[in-house]
Amino acid sequence: MKIRTIAIAGLGTMGPGIAARCARAGLTVSVFDVSAPARERAPQGIAFARGILDSLGIAAPDSGEGAVVVCDSLEAAVQQADLVIENVPENIETKAAFYRGLDPLIAPETLVASDTSGIPITKLQAFLSHPARLAGMHWSNPPAIIPMIEVIAGHYTHSATTQALVDLIRVMKLLPVVVKKDVPGFVENRILYALLREAIDLVETGVIDPGDLDTCVSWGIGYKLSVIGPMALLDMAGLDIYSSVSGFLNAELCDRKDVPRYISERAGAGKFGIKSGEGISTYTPEQAKILAAERARRLVAVRKVLEAKS
Figure (cartoon, rainbow, N blue to C red):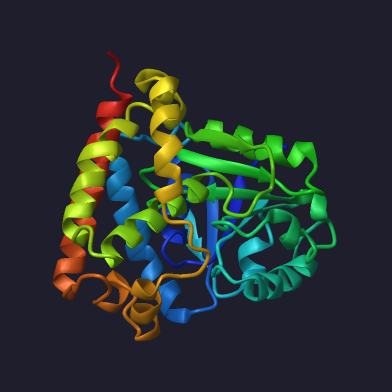
């Protein structure tokens, strides 16, 4: 199946960037969110993402950039879509309600992709009458910059559905990664949350301050991992070294199963981070805007270096 028209449901953190990236590939895109303010903010977010794509030198095909239309209803957004990308909040009840509402609005052959960060796709398939057409399509934030996208088949996903998503990602000149088992968190977030668990524990127990932790990771392992992946790093460092160090260090690493108080107390007080103006650090609206632009600029610069031919 060749995908030409895409509907995106959910215009929070990821939606506008996904819309801009799909449109830049020449696809026609319609977007919707149940929140009227989110729909009103969408053009600004899409314009910001388009600026990032321009800075990366990502040009539209000869046929031109696709249009992005903000719709006032889910029905209007999905009526012509070959693919619906679900990007609603990470709550299974919320997603279940969305799929039940979507089901009667689309044809049996319309493909559906969830951008869930970790809910198993098989669980979500229970809420569609044609589960074979649903697969995971996990973008990484910010989606206009990060080129890797995970593709995950649920238990009932047809192989043609998975292949269509892989083909689409390649058409957009992005990097599809096929996750072979539908495990919670897939791959990227399982690695990320393992790192975050240890990082939070080190800060919470007073081993290191947050700023120094970030410097240690960004300019230490993060710097290396941007060029040498973990499995290649094992070979570079030596499996004998890993065997020796992991033999005593693994027993010392954080293995807690709950959410650390360092996080839960802040979240419980409404301190969510940049979005609320305070989290681990505090941010003014102007600082938040400057941070977003500066981090995007740096990510663009790093990607250009990584893509440069030697």
